[in-house]
Length: 252
Image 1 (tube, rainbow, N blue to C red):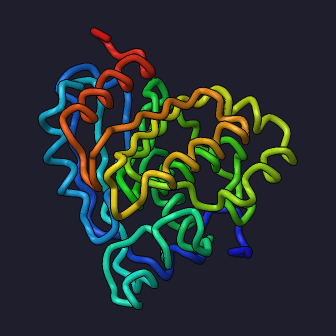
Image 2 (cartoon, rainbow, N blue to C red):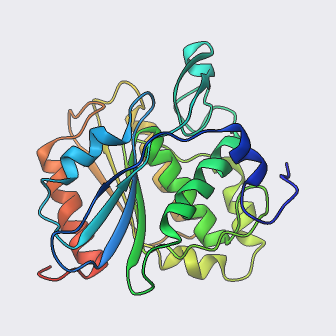
């Protein structure tokens, strides 16, 4: 699939209108910026409220809202979604056009950040799927359609999600110079609850294994016994510790 251009996803972005973006500005020295992506049917403001209260004063959080589009998993009913999905797992068909359009939107949000600030992408559920897809774009230095991906990411976080395009990742990684080195040096945190009945635990576990086998060696996988498809204080505490350590934040 090709969009016929080199600007990421020009053609795709004409079709998808993204919603409102919410920003939580750092309360201390600005050392990192993270784009955080909500789950299916949600909006950016749901997460910006949480980030206001986290003890991470050196991070700027950007919380965009996905386009409203028909979603196959809901029988074509429209809701906010980063891409179309018939199944909330790596087993369903991949909507490459939707994935690339959202990945380009995320990259654009990060492209104007200061050069001395570290950049990251994180998310929950479908947002986590987008974050992990962005990790593969970073390593491959290209979107799924072959257009160049120019953002240099420092961290990736995926909570209760899955890895899109997992079936082709290993072959694509082997065909590009430098992809293995970029993958191995990118810190990734994946968290999943064993009680998740929306995106089953096995999908998070399988996604982590696929990424490691493709060369993403700096990956931490955390299991939360009994946790459903939501976050918990224990998980949020782990997120804060991991980000502070891997971004080298003041006071870490």
